[in-house]
Image (cartoon, rainbow, N blue to C red):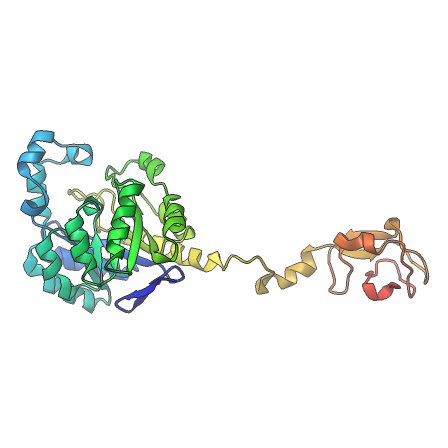
Length: 356
């Protein structure tokens, strides 16, 4: 079984779910606001606060987006794609302060490094690397991150299974510590998106890669129903966007979780974790007494004499079921047997009452 740590938190298929609050662009260009969001997500139960380190000029081509225009969720943006990325980028001078704020709030600092220089520059601050869905086919950054030999969290949005497999195999050549996240990269906040989350892809990941990966989910839908479903299917690392106010202007606020909904998600997930069990059906400790009060015992319908041969018409099957009662399921084995003693009406019929 694959098992590793992100700082002090154990990550495995049997561990508690690790929750990543992706602050992303929700800092709105303000360091003090970024720190505030770290504090809020830590209070709400996140294990990590995550950012995105990119420079507009090393992630998007202005001329390229002018040619294709604004597509999908970008169609609602009130500025050019290049300028939106420029506004959303983190000042690299913030990094140390963000790391310290995370330590102060006892939460892990994570970020996605979206260029090769950032992979190196951020290494000393990171307990793990997140690779965004858009870079799943960028071989150079996959190898560079994998070679850092820290846990890798790979999102798979907008990719097919062949692309997913080739990325996993490439990373695995250099690094064993991999979280593979099912992800759908539609950021429109539409309820229609639930039709495309495809949580059963987690089963395909598990069937294909087995114990070589830990399952995860990077999600952009409303609420936390997909999160609960993914945990039930084995996901143990969850990433969702986080803000303090869904009505703020910005590319990520609308589909983000807020402190209230994040806390509700974590609490519901912890309840779910407790309820999953080990997969072996058994009589549980808390239901032992239910056997007595809910099952049917075998009771004498009338007074019965010693040496009487038991007939079905002599019996009634009613609650409660005392510990020494014959099981109604096996009653055919005892029909025709003689009683060893007199049995009064409404007394239990036990094996000890019958001749073998």
